[in-house]
Image 1 (cartoon, rainbow, N blue to C red):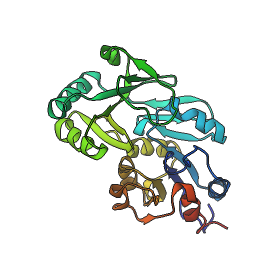
Image 2: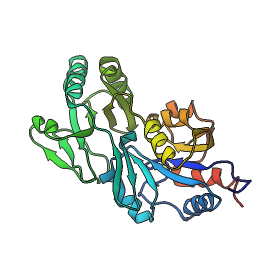
Image 3: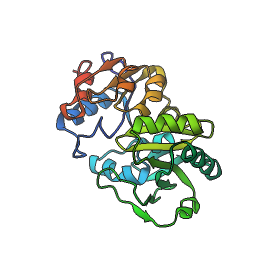
Image 4: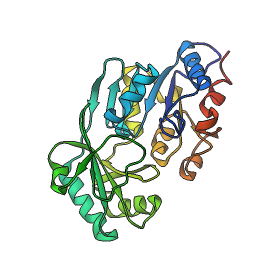
Length: 267
């Protein structure tokens, strides 16, 4: 490890953090991460996306390390194209949670991510998918429960994302973890699951510790990861909830915010 570079693990969120809006990574940021790994640090991608929605991006980047996917539910080995760990949502508890939330706020628009490296994302009527990610239409809500899931996505016709996430926590926080991962992305996860739990599993596989970790993110689902890591850096475009717990705010994902921080310690 280079004496000048103080971290053995660099953990980066994908959307809104490592990736620009067109899902590319700038040359400057690639070079900064390459220099950090050359100095002895490991880079772990930590994303809310499930593995099927993540692996094509990692392949395009030539990324061959570990990735924490599905808000911590999956540890994926990009070089070997296989899942090392996968945690599924208790479907009975999820059904109870949905019923409790809908009893408070009315009908929800639903989507679900099925478990596995090839797990489909099922999208119900009214649910607006962010970007151009592949999905399968869901015509019968009972099909949600036909196979193991890692998460449910919920949207509401009137409530904002923050309002919906808070209402969901109040109504069903004892049954599921509620995460707000981006615009239009409120998720119901296995109880107790977070990016921090997934990152700690991945780090342990590499013999790395929280005390030696710097983490970058932009949304409230990154709060547990910042709490776990030694140093948390929020992007300029980050949600206020994350900015308030960050050790530092850097430039935006469009302006090489990650590179700006890493370059301070690099040759």
